[in-house]
Image 1 (spheres, helix red, strand yellow):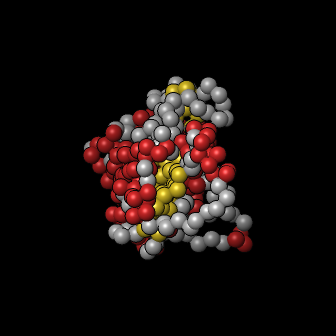
Image 2 (tube, helix red, strand yellow; image 1 turned 180 degrees about the vertical axis):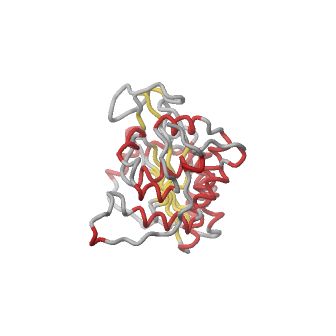
Image 3 (cartoon, helix red, strand yellow; image 1 turned 90 degrees about the horizontal axis):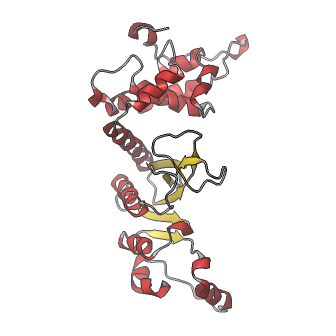
Length: 289
């Protein structure tokens, strides 16, 4: 059944009072907290600007669909068809500013119409919001973690490929690279990749971009990078040294058996100066070859 724009959207933004004694709370009453948060962040308006270049929008615009997905994850659901479990919930509708929620087909069609500019604008918004967050915290040190994660799918979705998948071997998947701020647990940015690439694929440029984003928010802050052995290479270490950041990189000892033997046989250890100039003077890429 189709509804007009006036029937779908609502203009009620007041935060309702919770009354526990009358036993009329819904399963998702806690979303009232996020309604206030979305208002403080101005999230609705900022999302609309991400898609403003598309001109005419459908009844359920891209911004509402993205906000719906945010709420969808907040209340613990992962698959689109799970919308059916709360499509009539008054608190969810109130938080989204809707009288009727879109069905799965409408959500899918709207997401499919998102062009490259929309995706870039949305990613920029995510970075900006996290930059605002860490800037408000006044951190002296920012620790950035980089790690890949396999996201499997049972269908031939665009951009998927058969690759490393620890949960289901042979399943088509994506293999995005996540940049996470350790102090807040928030994702700064994501490098979208197909499932058949190595962890380090496109990582160097992505790491540089994330370092620049943090420095833009906190000029002069001490940045620490943490990556696992999949990223270990001369190029990675040289880049991190040139960026003048502190870093820890796991060494894949199976590729350097001589180094493992040297460490096992070492009986005396000296404290290492952790300043950047130490790494610049002591790092010799050819020593690992």
